[in-house]
Length: 80
Ligand SMILES: [Zn+2]
Image (cartoon, rainbow, N blue to C red; front, side, top):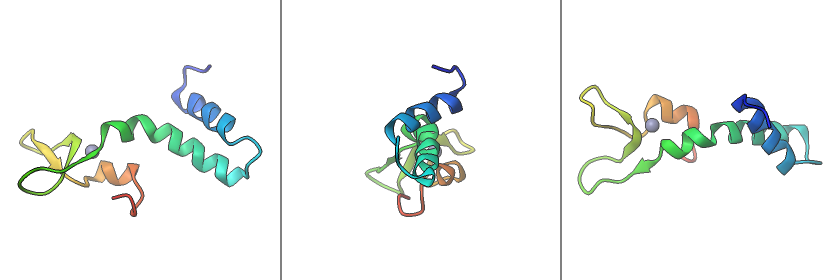
């Protein structure tokens, strides 16, 4: 197993999508590479106020309102 996270993600995705189209394998590789970041950047509902990201912070050090620019890099528009 490679220590390069991109190569390791591609290896995991390749094993899971063996025999599928190249497009499916490429998308699976990208999703696998993003998975650790998606695990950190989750949408969290609050009792009052807008939903926030579990990881991103605003200028005051508080959880930032969902979705931030970073969250938009990790999730599809449908998932946001
Ligand atoms: Zn975030």
